[in-house]
Length: 186
Image (cartoon, rainbow, N blue to C red; front, side, top):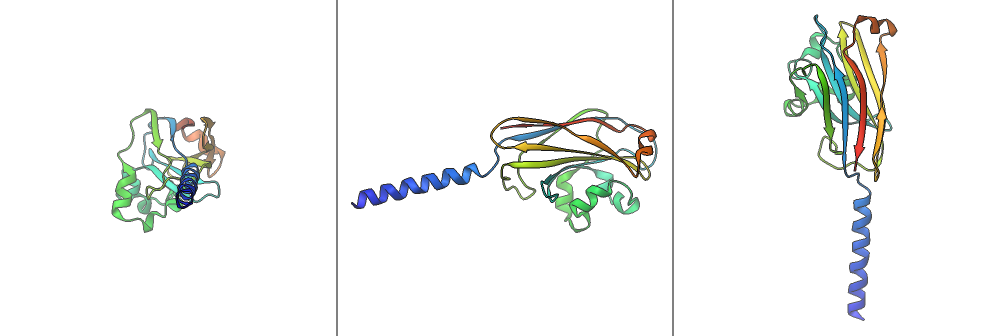
């Protein structure tokens, strides 16, 4: 009888452990975009991040060094304000900023990989996530690409849509980003 009880408990623990593992997404999301260089002050600043379905920041994948680490967001508050607000850049520690910032990317096709983990390293649950790529075209003119991607047990693809800010006239200022897509691969 005692062996049956222990065997039953072992099976229950295995089932619970398997269920807990099923509650986390395993795989990667690759975000791709084409980046163009735009000459001029305040241009070429980029931020890429992931939000949950409710719009809460999950993780920043990239932000240009000038904007994030060297205080460009304070000197030019109109540069990537969506990301600055979402990330809470004012409240981030220098180590947190260093972890996401990098040199201005070279023009061409860029691929960034999200490992389906939060900024703290915890795996995220399966579900729909937003990916956002914000680029500053010129002072006060920017583009925000937004797409949603499903992470779970099967591969999925997504194409993001641009929003030119403050209005559509910003599109005439130049093309900094195009062809923003994402692919989840379990």
